[in-house]
Structure formats: C-alpha cells, structure tokens
Image 1 (cartoon, rainbow, N blue to C red):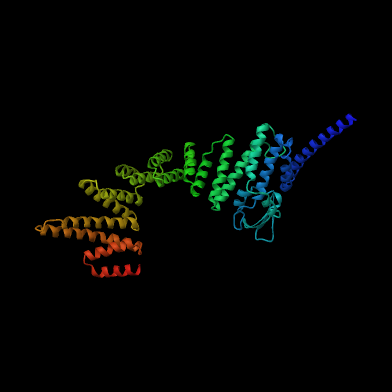
Image 2 (cartoon, rainbow, N blue to C red):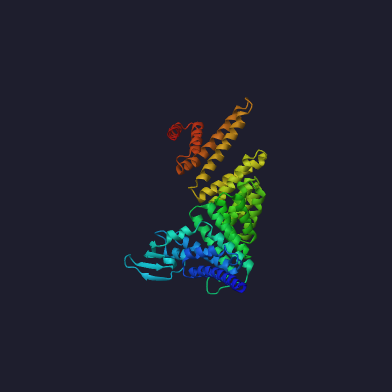
Length: 457
C-alpha cells in the first residue's frame, strides 16, 4: 500500500513538472507562430511557477515575447499617408514580399509580418491594413520593454551562456541590444511627436540598456541630452551633453546647446570651458568661434572678444555679421563708465568703421544701419551735454559744439531712415527719427513721423 502511495505521489510530481514545461513550451511555440497574445498569456503563467522561474530559458523566452509584443503594438507608429517608401523601410525594414497593386497609380502592396500590409502609390504611402492592430496595442500597458529588459537580465543571472540559435534574438545579450534599439526608436518617435518627457524617458532607458552591455555611446548621450533639454530638464541635459563631450562627440550643435544652457544658468566659467573644447574639436567652425566671442561680450571682456572676432574675419572677410558684432563690441566699450576718454574716442571710430563695413557688405542689414544711427545720435547727445555745461561767457564755443552735434544728427539720419525702410513699424527707430527731425528743424519729416507714431499706437 505504501509503495502504491509513493508511486502516485512521484507520478503526480512528474505530471506537475511536465505541465509546467508544457506551459513554457506553449509560450515558445506561440512566439514562433507569431501569436504574441497567446505567447504572453502562457509565459506570464510560467513565471508564476517556482520551478519554471528558476530556469534561464523561461526568462529568456519572456524577454523575447515581450519584445515581440512591443514590436507588434507599435508597428504602425508613424505610418501616415504621404510618407515615402524609404521612410517606411526605415521604420519597418524590408517587407516580406512586394506585389503590384492595380487599384492605385503605380501601386504597390508591401506585405509584412503579423498581417500588416502597406499600400503605396508612386512610392508614397497611401494606406495600410493591420487587422489585429487594436488587439496588439491592447497588449502593451506601457512597460513591455521594461519587462523584456528585466527578463533578459534574470536569464543572464541564472545562466549567461543560454542560447537558442533557432530564434532571434538567440540569447539574452542580443536581446538586450534589441531592447536598447526599441527604446531608442520609441524615443525618437516620441520626440518627433513633440512628447519630449516621454522621449527623454525612452532614450534614458536605451542608454541604461546600452551601458548594461558595457557600451559607451557618445551619440546616444547627445540625443538623450537633446530630449532632456526639450523637456526642460536642463540638469540632466548637462549631464548627458558632458558625457557625450567626454566620449569625443564632434557635432558642433552639442557644444552650441551645452554652452547656451550654461549661459542661461549664468554658469560662465563652465560655458567658457565647453566652448573651448568645442573649438578644439572644430577649429575651423565659424559659428563656434562667434559664440566664444559672444561669451566674452556678455562678460564685458572686450579685448578677448575683439581678438576672436578679428580671427573670424580672417577666415570670412565678407561676413557682414562679423563686422556688426565688432561694432557692437566697441559700443560696449563706449557704454562702459570706467573706460577712459582716449579709449572711448578710439572705440567710437572703430565702431563707425565696423558698422560702415557691415553695411557695405549688406546694405539691407537693419541692425547695422540702426546701430550706426544710434551711435551718431549718441555722439551728438554727448556733445550737447558738454555744451550745456559750458560757462555762459563761452557763447562762441557753445555754438560751435551745437553745430557739431547737429552735423552728427544729420549723419545719423540716413542710416535710421534706411533702417525704417527695412522695418517700417520699428518704434525705436520712429521715436529716434522724430527727435532728430525736431532738433534739425525738419518740420515736414517731423510731422510725417509724428503721424506714423500715432497710427502705430
């Protein structure tokens, strides 16, 4: 009797183990048959069993199945009428088969796995059919890639050498690479849709997965930094940008973005370090050179800014913007209360020359015309203040200085008039011209400008 009982118990244990293996096998078979909804159902049951959950293959299959679920749930993301055939291939890869489709002009029918069919006309997408789209999307509760990542990690922890060459991915490491790629694609799609926080989350996950594989990806850090910056997370953005620079990423936009963040945070020292590194990597890039000059302009380091700008002009002597920025640099010296008279007099002459050169190169340059007018107007105002402070006995000197000021106002007039032609509604320009016409007794133009100002109120 005891022997019979023991036999029954043993047979029962064998039956349970066999049943659990059947659950894993069923999940695996449904996965191979491209039935992700069934595969997910069975693999979720399998991990609830202690014996199945102790095997590397269970977690590996779970990783593959959840990766498949994520793939089918998002196959049609970004598939909209009007995108090109090349764009479709970038999203979905090569179709399983391609056929002519006579219902459309130069029509094609691209057939993909899981029942997806894409219709094209003249190599442009017209529509698609995806019978199980609603079902497949319902399988993804937003964490399928997270589950796949965790599952592969558990498989590696149990048996890092487990492999099944009959399927792809064939082991947990290649599975993690696929997960990283899927996180990346999800991040890029979210960014394109302007869902920046979601993009940041997915790209951070791609980065985490890549680093778990022992990889250091400069470009991925850069893209993650862009997403974080767009999401308003500048602290994280700095972290990813700096990591990208340390890995030698060369795109000038990396340094441009990083420097701008530092400047917006008033982190001038860090901005200078970043721009120098950017220029070391891209020594011939004019945009970075000008940006470095602007940093010194922002901090009032006029001499350093001038040296950089003169170097920029050597590289690009017909760039009107460079001459304008040099003029603005000398303007800053004029407005600096600690600058000596000699230094200011020199700055005035240099500013004039720079603005004139900018206008010679581009007569339609509003800022250069306006600043030149303001420069001459301010010189006139400075002379009038000095004249007003003369002793009463110096009438002759007063008249001379007053006439000198009027001449500067008359010189300013054509530059401001040209600026107004370029931007007819610029209020600053209108107000300044009104004052000049008043001081030079130009009653006709004074009335004209006064009427314009009334209209623009």
